[in-house]
Length: 315
Image (cartoon, rainbow, N blue to C red):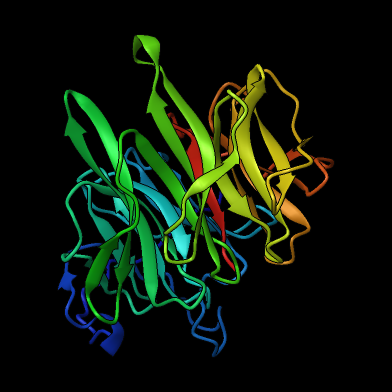
């Protein structure tokens, strides 16, 4: 298999004014190759980001939608997770197992957001690229809780959007910025976490149920036109990919398999959806048409014991 590893970036290039105050951390991140990306300054546009254990640690990778040219983008001791691409395709944000959120620039520099709460995860960009929504976790009475926060990169300010019991995960802004969709879990009997999809306005206010039917409904992903939401649900016993309209109505099942299927992400034109599947007894990235047809694995990574997970299709 032809796998490309990015060269170690030792150059300390100046950061843009947008994130000058952030703290540099040592992380390999320089995916540029001469003549590959043209003059757009958007090296990730149209590519699929994901985390993989192929190198023996959870690192961020990119790959073409046809399964070619896999590139390892990071290499450092922390385990990386939940990559997300900026709307212009120029930058990446991801979390790690230290509870940090890191922004990576195309010139190879990477910074962690040092003004946000500790133990933060699930970062995602705002449609204008100036903010990042995320979840900050803490423990209360022996149970983990998590709330939605928003970080303003220009102002270096954070704002807490939700406050309450339970766990929030995977916040996603709608393409027009008018709403934030996320999963919200409450602790049930026997320590069972029951998760539902909730919707808030673009400022994170006025939260209300979006998909709530007594089943686990998680990992929402807006279609590029904002008319549909793909998500993972176990309402048919096994975890599969489902689709609802913008109002949370008219559910339609896209995958039907006894294996785990989750983490959907839309292609930029809205015609395809990438997702994670364990139908071949390990976590792999698969793609399918938006109606659930033409399912196929993106690429087989032999030797990756932990598999691949958390795909994000860049705009």
